[in-house]
Length: 227
Ligand SMILES: Cc1cc2nc3c(=O)[nH]c(=O)nc-3n(C[C@H](O)[C@H](O)[C@H](O)COP(=O)(O)O)c2cc1C
Image (cartoon, rainbow, N blue to C red; front, side):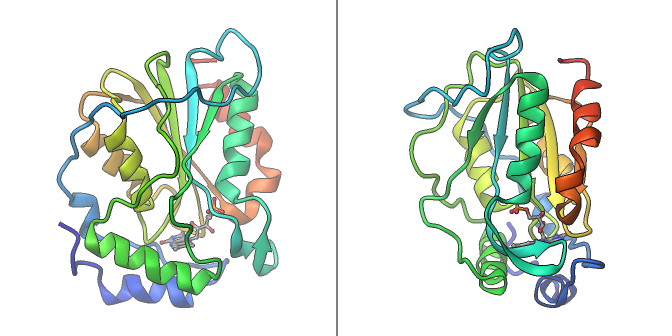
């Protein structure tokens, strides 16, 4: 498991990183054993982004944190998280439904405090609780799964999600926003955790560049052959 496996260079990355050159954080947490998908208990309807032929088949799932983060001018307070912006581009381009993973206990608003909590969750191989009920993903063939890179990996609450729904047989498309780590370990982690799913090309956008990345994201999403 991930306990105690985060190295000192990784810990330094979060507290001292800047928007221009954060250190990619590689951890052994990516080697955590593959979780077994299981059915979520109760399953509400995801929000419908808009009506289209693809709306009943593609779901964009994401976790994103607003509050203090890195924007164009260094640390700033974001009203909408970078990954949520990227998720919106995808959903709009594909006419897909969306589901936002909301933590039952909010992460700290301050960047450094959030880094501390996220690092501890990674070391603990935690499964933070999700607020509300998980979505019914049975109607969907394609599930985008998006998140920020935290310590080189997906936030642990993404693992809570993928273990809470049955993604076997689904086509999964990972996407991330980041401060320099790109996709990090996310595609590999998801593929290890979801051996019975099919994966399409993942895509990463720097968080600070997300506002100008609509065309790039739409080109990628619509080029996957699922639009
Ligand atoms: C707790 C925490 C850990 C982070 N770790 C990394 C990292 O290892 N590598 C990286 O490139 N960016 C890292 N970042 C930066 C975020 O990935 C980046 O700002 C992202 O765009 C935030 O997306 P969001 O606003 O949707 O949460 C970290 C940010 C936080 C809050």
